[in-house]
Amino acid sequence: MIPMREQLLRFVDELRGGGVRISVAETIDAMRAVAAAGFEGGPLREALAASLVKDEADRPIFDRTYAQFFGRAHPAQPRRSDRRSGARTASGGPPQAGAGVAIRPLVEPEQSQPKLASRSKLRRLAEADQSRGTPRGDGDAEAKAAPGEKRSESRDAESVEARRQAQLAAIERAPFDHYSELDYETAHDLLAILIRRFRVRLGRRLKPARRGRIDFRRTIRAATQRGGALIDLRFRARRPRHIEVLILADISGSVRYAATLMLELVAGVRESFQRVHSFVFIDHLAEAGFEEGHLVMTPALDPYARSDFGRVLEELWERRGELLGPATLMIIMGDGRNNRRPARADLLADIAHRCRVVYWLNPEAAERWGTGDSAINQYARHVAALIPSRTLGELEHALIEAF
Image (tube, rainbow, N blue to C red):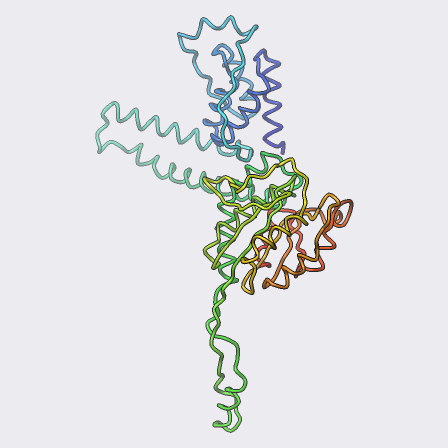
């Protein structure tokens, strides 16, 4: 099966071969418009037409090409006010950029077109009967069509759910270092599903026990009253779990995708913990938060700075030492590349001694650990576990294991 992105590029090339002038900016706008409008027959066709067709005289060429690539097309009749622009087919008009929208994954839309076409036909028939004043008692056609329409809507809903599950499975297997902006937007759009699933799994893991551990001394004392038979088991009082989470995420280079998605996942389940403190770093430490779905840093970091994790550890130890305590669960996300600057692994050892536990999540391929300017082997000696987190699926399992 040809990926939708490549199919759209071929579709644009075919339109250009037919005489329709399309710029690179309009091609990008078309992909964004399709991602925003969806992949059903009607919205897909109109989104492409609005982005690529600048002259109504080019619409017949667009319809024929669309029918070849995506199935049946419904040609649009040119408006009277625009027929005079037919002479511009050869010369073309000035390129116009479409509106920028959020990018979503591209999938094949062929399966959903016949169903939508039948639904629109039923809708037109119903509207025509109402305009003719059909009596309520003569609506046999509508009564017969209603069950079929409900079945069609049910099949459409199942198809949409299947496509969403396929998108989720594909994005979970994609490595972060192979992400493009489109892949990141796709993962970000599906993040709500991941957060719900992560909240359920984390809730099961952190669910408080009904009772504490067995108290052997009290159990043996109770057994003496029954001739030594261990019938009545006595338990200790259950201790509530108070966990404070401290996140330290590297947002430099290709690691920024993994770090941002991890911060959003943890932010979605922050009610499961007593406190959550999130920090990001490149060469300095900054507090992190989310406003309207966007990562906000205080103070702002220079994205072109060179990573210096040793300096970040110094700032954390000197300025944020009050956040480190026996109940603190610290999670570090990064590749451990320090540009050959002092690693300061001794500070990480002191931090790990003060905290409850420290886990390191590494989104880099395991075969690259310790190569070049990577200081990950020095840091790995002082953390409880070094967990691979190269994909979104691995990241979710790593967080479950850490919590």
